[in-house]
Image (tube, rainbow, N blue to C red):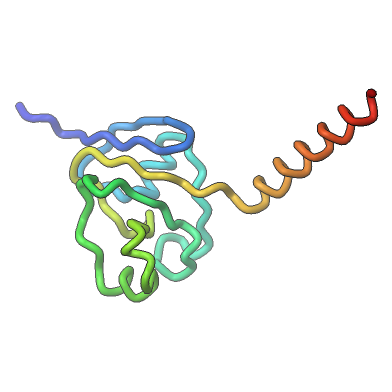
Length: 119
């Protein structure tokens, strides 16, 4: 009996999950506990679920709808996680959530300011 699951790794978390071939990257991320933002419910309408994939990743070909939405970003290996289906080993880089990134930067700045006032 052959392997009926494929492996997906998400960066920067390093979380890996095994899913059935044909599973979208978005569904795989949810299964792995990796948060990917989306607003359109997986209909390739909002562009929020973009991920960067490794060139050797075994994904479904990019559809016309996805190509149209991503415009020139496909050259940068960007895919919509709600549309890209996994058929073999894939590594995907999830961009930071903009709100979480703002909070992270502010906390870092606050910690630096506190360190400066100690001396």
